[in-house]
Amino acid sequence: MSLAKLTVSALAVAAVSATGAAAQSRDNVQIAGSSTVLPYASIVAEAFGENFEFPTPVVESGGSSTGLRRFCEGVGENTIDIANASRSIRESEVATCAENGVTDIIEVRFGYDGIVFASDINGNSFEFTPSDWYLALAAEIPVDGAMVTNPNSTWSDVRGDLPAQEIAAYIPGTRHGTREVFEENVILQGCEDTGAMEAIMGINGGDEDAAEEACLELRADGVSVDIDGDYTETLARISANPEGIGVFGLAFYQNNTDTLQVATMSGITPTVETIATGEYPVSRPLFFYIKAAHIGVIPGLKEYASFFVSDDIAGPFGPLAAYGLVADPELGDTQSMIENEDTM
Image (cartoon, rainbow, N blue to C red; front, side, top):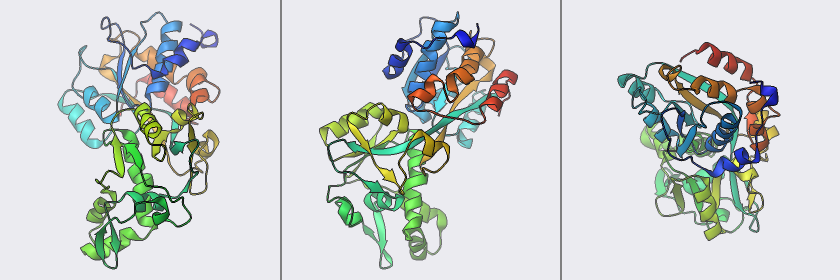
């Protein structure tokens, strides 16, 4: 089949909200993982089914950690073939995979996404910094040489020129890859920028690891709410509480601009362009992981992966870019890696 003739129908784009039905047989490629990667994988799976003589792959969500846990359960037709992830696989997960016989893994970076902070379109506008989010959500903050319970209840308590609006944050739960990026690029960065990291080390005798843990310990008083579902749950929380602010992927926000407005971060508005240039400070690469032992066993597995990273699909003018993906400038290398079945 010539990629020049491929079609990405309205059905494929409409399918981004679906998590896929149960496979009729093991002729299907089976995929699970990141809710951020879910819409991209769903578009690709539907287009693959329309353009190839293979069954449409089954794509499920559940979060990056859940997908990688299922991926590492073993080799065989009763295990998934691909794990989608909005973070790179951890060394501990690679070790678990190896213990269960999953020793040959192909890591595929297919593009970039930004993490955005969005609120009700009719509410206040926000211009945030990482420091604001640390001071809003940290369980304790250093004050005069001691750790005290976070006293901030409104955004204007955090910084005087922010709106006098109750802090209500809907953030990704710990099983989501987005959470790791949120913690590293926002909370921990804010802890460092405010000088809190240095102050905490002064309190604890210079233990940097303990200071980092203290920075990342978030409030449990209802101000910060972990969302374990996908972004539709976060959107529902904001619909129920218009003063809430949610953490979303750029693509999800871009497809819900009729109800959401986005905040700037460190003076930069998140767009495809500002993420591609690295100007927007809260962005991350997106991945999927292929179980190499299943190539040649599960029909269409390698073909699906190659199709996913083709210029026509994942390139700057493909349907994934139209949905919000920032194309990877090294996509050609990724294509070669899949063709050669290069493992980690």
